[in-house]
Length: 143
Picture 1 (cartoon, rainbow, N blue to C red):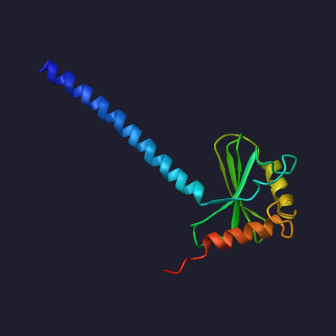
Picture 2: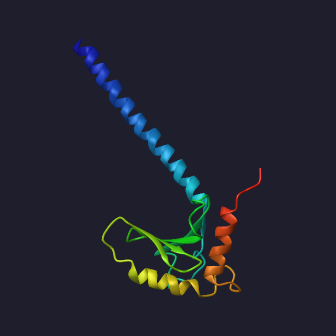
Picture 3: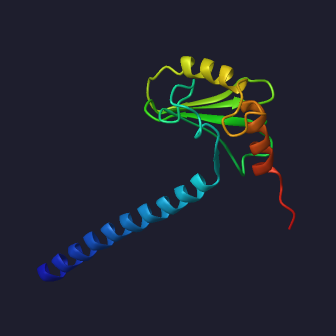
């Protein structure tokens, strides 16, 4: 009985470790799919820009909720917040915070950044580029 209990405990510990590993791998694959679905807007911006790529990820995503207005996401890499900013009226749609960091300076910079020429295509503003990417990524595909 004692030997059986020891074997059972060893088996349970092994299965628990395997389950955690499998869960982490599934989560990694899911995140990879999500990242692939993201269009970065500021990755070509200069580090001296209002939203330097080393500090902020500015992006639009595909497969967003159809009832949500066109918007972009601004994620602070260090301060752990993410803002959703509407592209049609430049209003804050939502804020996700994982800490107490203040995001007001970044949101003000984002509203100004939207009016600047895009580093991707200087003939367009950042707002125009974000809207074009959003529309492209969220247009229903024909079967």
